[in-house]
Length: 118
Image 1: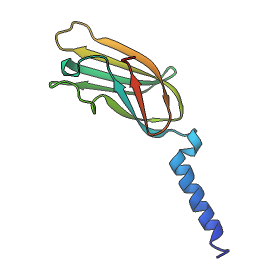
Image 2: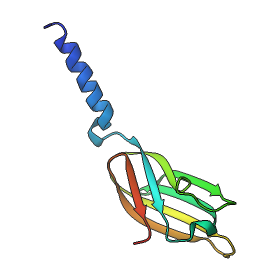
Image 3: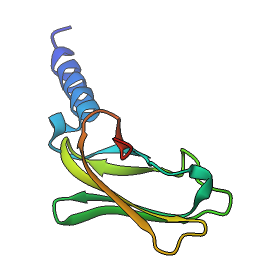
Image 4: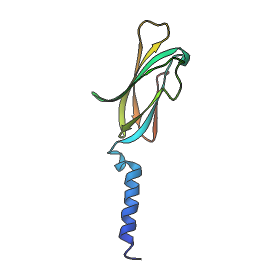
């Protein structure tokens, strides 16, 4: 039994570091959900951006013919714990220019909700 303790300890430590992404120092895959203050049926185009200071971490562009769904208003992105900036550029059906929303958010846990409605 004494010979197995080091192996067991290494395995437990490995699982802890894997599940916690090195205690928040390394990025882990998170879902960022964008809550937009527009009619989702009227959305024709959507660009979602996640910024870490001046560095663009992720940008996705979607053209929508049937309007926006909740799944289309989210993005999976590797983030460490901390504060980030989210931006959404929304093109509405029948509108001339796109509308831009920006807000800072805290990344901790598996998902972060960015509520532009507040």
